[in-house]
Length: 249
Image (cartoon, rainbow, N blue to C red; front, side, top):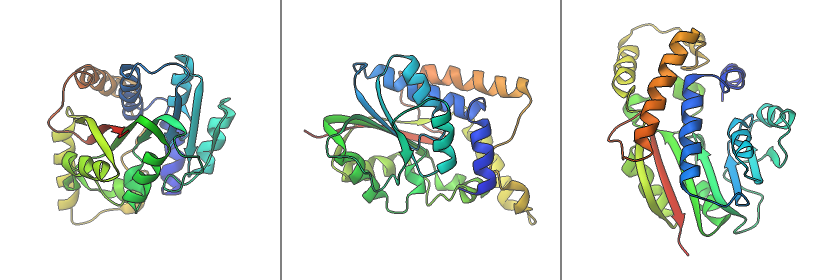
């Protein structure tokens, strides 16, 4: 992650409409799994820990988080989160079958060897343990935002499902997410690519921008409405791809 982007990331992940809506989508999915509050949960890419804080507030007691960002882990620790540490998501320092649930939201695209990572995530899951993965969707949406994030790829839903299945897991549910903004985003990315001159130094924070509170609230309201649909239906297109997978017993 570009240092400028990382600084903005930790400043905005609490309130920015994208982060809040994505976090709520993940949280809702976890709630739908009906796990016991003693379930062993690992978040890969926990950053400053906002999802872990929400889970702790909901009563989950056995939470662990890792991130490659030392800054992010220090933020998480400053918020009173235990069991967080700096670790490579493709080389986990946990024993086999250590967790009931692994969460990796916007992580897999950062790892060059995706199968190495997925094999590790499968390894640390207990038999019939579950994996939640979100990734950026569609290479056609590739932009400077992906570059400053050091992404290796974006995924179609069939591609994401295929690589997860190759790790020895069964897909329980698959969908796109953020359909509401897909077409505006696609048009914006097309316009960016057609510009003949770009000031890359001005976009080192990617698509992260501090928005007026009204606009931030409007976009959050829009995605919260979509999240209600996402809980029940498979969305046909979106800016992100999502799978829920189960480790084969």
